Image 1 (cartoon, one colour):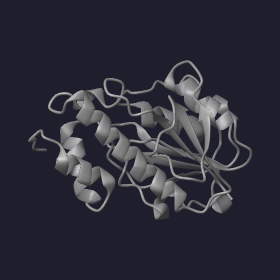
Image 2 (cartoon, one colour):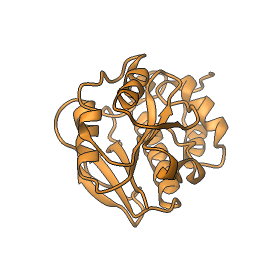
Image 3 (tube, one colour):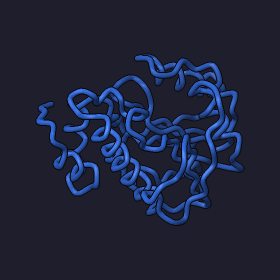
Image 4 (cartoon, one colour):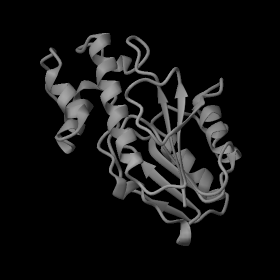
Length: 205
């Protein structure tokens, strides 16, 4: 079975989802981040896995469900932190972030029988999921993160390594208010959609 990893930040006002402010306040942005993380962890908890890891910058809170091991993120850029997360895995592993609360167990239940890697592209040019049958931190180190070409560079890195890459559906990350409304509409029953509806700010996609 696969190890499932979620890389995340503790939802503290002023430290998470800063691109949501404005129109949301830092507290509202943190509440939206917490709801997105809770939805993500719930999907991971419902997915068959050999182990579930939360790779966390900060401290766990009441939003963390049972069944997860928590490890601290290492220092360095995002490429180094992702590489270190994979370095701690034995066997097949799939890593996702906390920015796609619309994710489902069906999307996460991957099978490496006919592929060496899974790649989930994001609409902003990054990626929301990366799976490796044989985790190799070198596949991530040096990839430029948080750019419009991050996903293309990362996928090409996998291909150049000779891996058989299987693509997952393209998903939209929650970075802006427009993203928040669009993603909430895709998962209207989730905690994220409920929290967005309670926020004071009146925004439109």
